[in-house]
Image 1 (cartoon, one colour):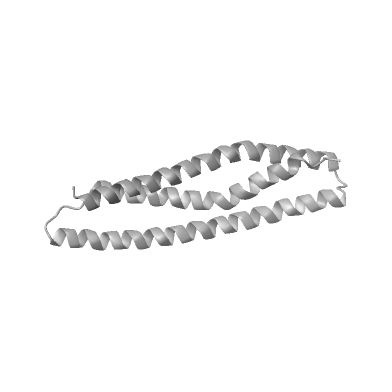
Image 2: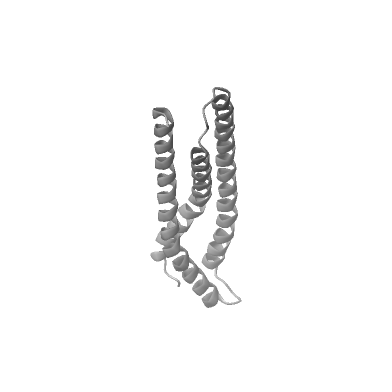
Length: 147
């Protein structure tokens, strides 16, 4: 293994670790925020019954609009990360052919590491908009009265 492939392997590992840590932290925060938001909103729906107040209707409308916006942003972010990953993998493939032509053996481990890193970055990018809204809603609704 050359010094260059060793350094690119370790930088790929750092990126993978960063994306993995970020994804794990976001998942843990969402595991706490989502039940709180759901409990507040379901309680509000139950208390409102067939005649929700203007404040209730506003919250229910916001709930629906936020989901559509968050998932749209999530898909867009994941699409952009997939585009970046495809570009990087295309460049890596060209490098692999160049290495093979020069008589060196390309590293399958580096390729698999790059694929894993890309998958984690795609997942983290997709989680970000949903996470941001869920945590913000949890903070906002924690201080909001049901009545």
